[in-house]
Length: 114
Image 1: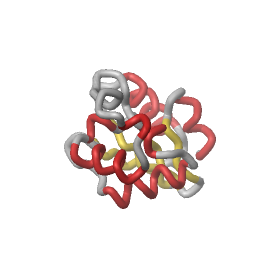
Image 2: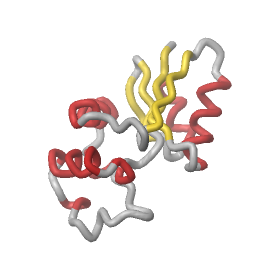
Image 3: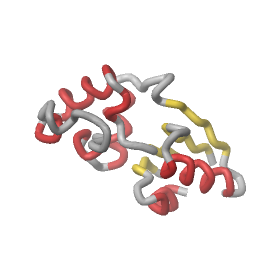
Image 4: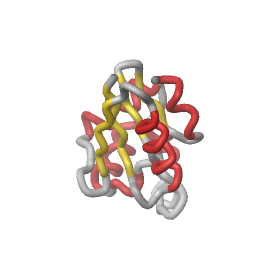
């Protein structure tokens, strides 16, 4: 099985999710450091759609100005545009497999798509 993790190595939850993936037998992990290689708007829209969540539910609030910018109440297109412009706004980690996408908070949610 292939798995892609949209990863921030400075985040403990993201490191935990990566460790979980690497411990799984038969899982081929691709790591995308999204702060260095941000996803496109189309990719973000697909990730959130496949996760069954609104883009604003994937906003990182801690350490960002998302609330002050009104992004917690904004539509998906506005939130995604803000995330593309400033990838620090993306809550992490996002994990994608052929079984779906999960925001790995808590980390064990990743198990649902393995």
